[in-house]
Amino acid sequence: MSNKLKDILDKKGPIKNIGVVGMGYVGIPAAMLFANSPAFDHVYGFQRNSKSSGYKIDMLNRGESPLKGEEPGLEDLIKKVVQANKFKCISDFSKISELDAVTLSIQTPFKNPKDLIPDFSALTEGITLVGKYIKEGSLVVLESTITPGTTNSMARQILEKESGMKAGVDFALAHAPERVMVSRLLKNIQEHDRVIGGIDDISTKRAIELYSPVLTKGKVIPMTATAAEVTKTAENTFRDLQIAAANELALYCEAMGINFYEVRAGIDSLKGEGITRAILWPGAGVGGHCLTKDTYHLERGVKTNGGKLDYLQEEESLFVLARHINDFMPKHMFNLTIAALERVGETPKDANIAMLGWAFLKNSDDARNTPSEYYRDLMLSVGAKVKVHDPYVREYPGVDISHDLNEVISGSDAIAIFTGHDVYMDMVRTANNIKRLMGKYNPIIIDGRNIVNPDEYIEAGFIYKGIGRGDKNSHSIVNL
Image 1 (cartoon, rainbow, N blue to C red):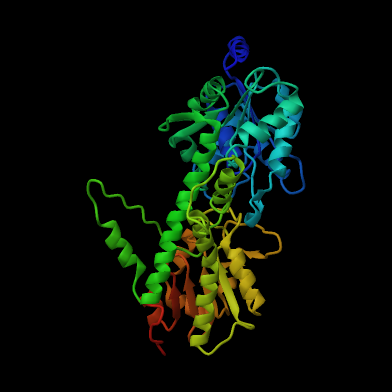
Image 2 (cartoon, rainbow, N blue to C red):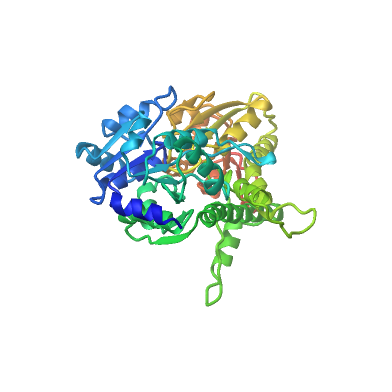
């Protein structure tokens, strides 16, 4: 602990002006909540003025949200803080020199999960820019999910090199991982407990000062920076594991000809003292920026922090195996589609496939690492023709996204449901109307999100296949 840093912060006074680097699903809502707090005077959102994302600057400064999924309260909050002159989005990073605290919310994907080498290029660029402009007494907080040990090693080294100062002596440094889910961003930031880990006690206390004003129900959980990094990677790894357990059980139920959802209800019914059940739902795959990579950050942390792991010899990590199971689910959707086509004597070559949903999460426009892409690639590889519909995703590199649901369904041989958007919940209740649009005697529907009523579709003449529906996947074909 440095008395010098404490003296600097005491002289500097409370945090008033904040910068948020990275205007995405994490940075935008965080910046708006900081700006809306009476504890702070002004917030700057820092966004590179690039071809791919520079448009966000003007949108935010007009009080508009670049996020096009359903985010309750976000658009109104953006308008409010912009009109109150408490928020501005800029690309001039030199403004950081005038701020008391800077947070970084930048993606940290993996180039290749097999070699456990993350792509920290965007994060290191952001840290470098911050390091160039921070002043004595600044607080720097990494919100990005990172390999355990990164804050106190790579991030610290870059900041010290660029600033010419020492972390924990001249400026404060901490990790406070985001814990949000798309479609409930504001709610999550305010109501979830906030894990805050500084490189020392003074840094932790300064970061607590930053985040406490935006918490409503959530409380602060202080710890070391590395413990905070492990907490974030582990909580996402555990959720991925829980989903994988549901997915594998669903595959078992299919193989045994029973209904996963009946089994799940039975498991979930056991209540009582000392009994914990956390069985989640199976589905067409896991997407997004977090769950698809955080297992690998956790695995890498074990390998890069110098400790010796006492574990089963020559056995794969349970967490990595879970990741592989979830990665397999789009392939399972492909296998179900091929099996359904075979039931009506068809091959995938030249089959017309209507994919419903490109975003990985319902009522969201977030298509990062979407499982839909793997399925589409598989169908195209066997000669199928694929059309994609999503009401929220406006565009995606190399993929035409239609917003006309009827046009995508019309003339298709098979429908594959990948996302549980509300618009699909309404659509799938009308089997006969969908059959007329498809124009097939025995059209196919592959339900990856347990949306449709199998009996209704089977009775209408459909070939039905659903994840976890072993009781229905081999049904008799109804010829009307």
